[in-house]
Each structure stands twice: as C-alpha cells, then as structure tokens.
Amino acid sequence: MQDYALNRFNNVVAIGGGHGLGRVLSALSFMGPRLTGIVATTDNGGSTGRLRREQDCIAWGDLRNCLSQLASRPSVGSLLFEYRFAGDSELTNHNLGNLILLALDELCVRPLDAVNLIRKLLNIDTKVIPMSEQPTHLVAIQSCGNKIFGEVEVDGMHEDPIALSLEPMVEATDEACVAIAAADLIILGPGSFLTSIMPPLLLPKLSEAIADSKAKIVLIENLTQEPSSALNFCLEKRLQWLSQILGNKQVDHVLCHGEDYHCADNVTYYPLRSKHHQGMHDRGAIAEALSLIVSKDKLSESA
Image (cartoon, rainbow, N blue to C red; front, top):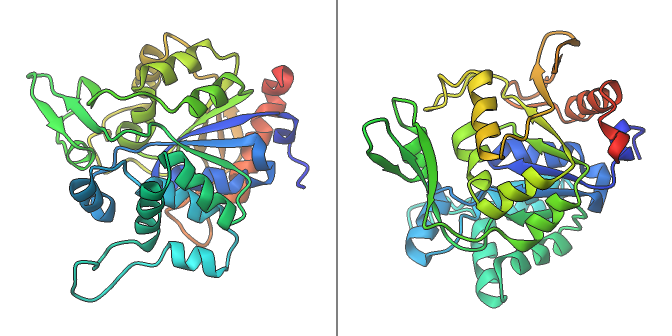
C-alpha cells in the first residue's frame, strides 16, 4: 500500500459525477472499503438519456464510469463494461455497461444491489453509491423565472442560473448519508460544478448530513474552464453556492492545477495534468496532492 498521508483516514467520501469522480476514486482506490463514491444520477444525455426516456430509470452512465475506472485493467470485465455498440440498429451507441446495470436493476430489489453485484464481479473494494435510487432531473432557474429542465440543457445555458433544483425531489440513498456521517474527509469534484457536483448536494438529507459532519471538505478544481453555463462561476462564487447549500459549512481547502507546487491561504496548486491525457487529472498526482494537503493542514487530526 502506498505510504500516503490519506491512509490515516478511516472513511473518505468523494462526491460528484462523470469522469472527474471516477478519476478521484481510481486515484484513491488503494484505500479499498474505506473509500466511498457518491455519484450524481441526473444525466439525461447519450445512452443514459435514451434508457431514462424508455425505462424511467436512474441515470446509469456516471455510475458505470466510476465502476469502470475502478476495475482492474486490462480485463475482460472492464472491456465488456465499456463496450459501445456500433452499426445501425436500436443498440447503436448504447453502452453495454449501462444495459447490464439496467438489467440487474430489474432483477434486484434496488439499484444499489445492481451496483454491488457489479462491484463483486469486477473485484472492486471501493464503495460506489447512487445519490438517489429514484429517477430525478436537474432543473435550473433563470433570473427571469424560467426553468431549464434536464442536465444536458442546463449545461447548454448561455446565462448563469440563479438556483438549481431537482424534479421530482427524491430521497437520498440511506447508505450515502451513513457514509457521510462516518466520513473523516469529504472530497468534492473535479467535474462540472452545476451538473456533477451540485446534484447530490440538492438532496436535503445528503446536504444536511454534510452540514452535520465533522469531516473536512476539499474541493478539487477542473484543469480548464468549463464549456458550460458554469463558465462565469469564479472560485469565490462556487464556494458561496456550496456554503449556502451546506448550511454555511465551509470548504476547508481547494486543490487546483498549477505548473509547480505552492500554496496560497487555503488553496494548493500542484501539477495535476496527466502526461498521457492532457484533459484528465493524473491519478498519482491527485493522491500526492491530497496527501500534501492533509499533512500540511493537519486535516487528518480528526481521523
């Protein structure tokens, strides 16, 4: 096991969606069952969106992405889970992993059971939990009072929303709230602020669990500005939104990409960009930077 300062923590929870959360979970997978990912389930685009429209299910895509990045590579299981159908048929562009999760969900009592079955099949120790087990959509409210319905549509907005909501409002997954209550450290991001980080926090029980938690919170920033409606959200504005929704609980530290390692107040800059994928965070760098943060700021004193 790597000698990271993060190993001092008993329970680490990472919250988000898409590629960003999967990258963090993969980077910290050495923590095994002490690491939990809480995944946004509001996506309505691509293969996931088609399944949602046809089956009235939760969004499986971000869950699949996290599980895929946690799976041992290369393996037949990971290749099958990421396989995307080509050709010209009803299956075209569908992801096999999404279909497998949907099928298992129909065979199981609850969506989390389906996720846990895949974890067992792919030999994944890290816990992966959907933010809710009930279908819901992300909604943005504009300054004029109009509502923009759907995650893809919110990402395509040309003006900043003044608020976000979920429709219908659903219940947070109990296991997610339990994980947060036990957490020593909570990690938010990287990923789209409005459509990956915010959706889980819009669930009252989940945001209340974070507000009541004694865990320290670290926000991981994106490598570049978002090509979305969050483009004009400076760091200060994002922190204000988080503080408002979390009952004025503050983000304790922010991790940003920088050409060299240095700190300014509660912000750490560290070379995070992958040499192999310029648009992705380097897994090793994430773990190293977070370990530096918890060592420097003694965030692990409560662990």
